[in-house]
Image 1: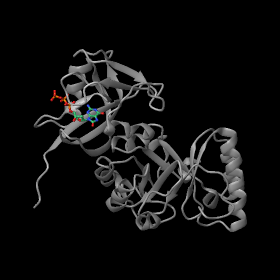
Image 2: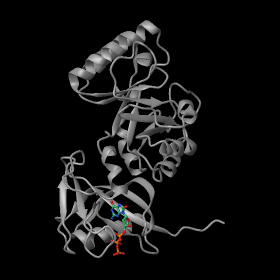
Image 3: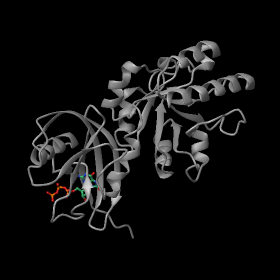
Image 4: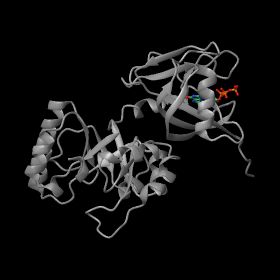
Length: 312
Ligand SMILES: Nc1nc2c([nH]c(=O)n2[C@H]2C[C@H](O)[C@@H](COP(=O)(O)OP(=O)(O)OP(=O)(O)O)O2)c(=O)[nH]1
């Protein structure tokens, strides 16, 4: 027998300052999980949108009026007291100075070294995702030429890079991978390698892997022991499988027409938003984009943009 689960809808604000710190709030006495830390927010009332609920909650709790708020992650969590659907939004702009109007404690902290403890289980999942950049660069030696791309890479400061070169010969790949490893060490950058290359002996040092959609759908567990595991996907099935495996992000595309697939129009921002704004993990927009598209991606609930030609 199917028993319908009552879902409590919650709007949550991940409030960021200019230094990348986030605002944590302590749950007050009298509520479930009293004393635990969370991101500010609360239940969505009948007839409210997520943004309206968040505006109201943050004004009531913190005395701030938010003015820059975008959807980010949506996930469900089963607690003994309730099954909640949490819609986490990134808040980058607000008027007023946060102060605990209902007597709760608040604290700005670095999400990588939060000084608060314990943090609610559903909120703690956001912390590693908060260190993902908004701009993910895909290597472009195949499309720009090895020498031209390596020169541009050398002039690029610390970044997160995906090494993915389907069209290079083995010796070219080896040369590119050696140069990427040296750049990674020199800049303190993070390098992920496409799963199509991961077993090659030239691969060098790297920090994670990005699964092709085919490798993702064939996997039944998160590949170990990488720090970061992402996947390239084309739709809902890929997003859902990546979330089931506990991956860190997906790249979803193609959003716009790309030079590598001429004549294919891309899904467009509306279709991207329908998938990204409800995804339970960070989603990068991929395909025919430039850094100027970052605002579109943010507004559509994306983590940011993944750039191939447009990144160099
Ligand atoms: N605000 C917030 N709630 C979270 C987070 N993570 C998480 O699992 N939750 C859960 C805890 C609660 O079950 C639910 C939020 O409900 P709540 O009781 O705090 O909401 P509220 O402020 O509207 O409460 P109330 O006035 O109706 O009592 O979501 C988070 O980071 N922030």
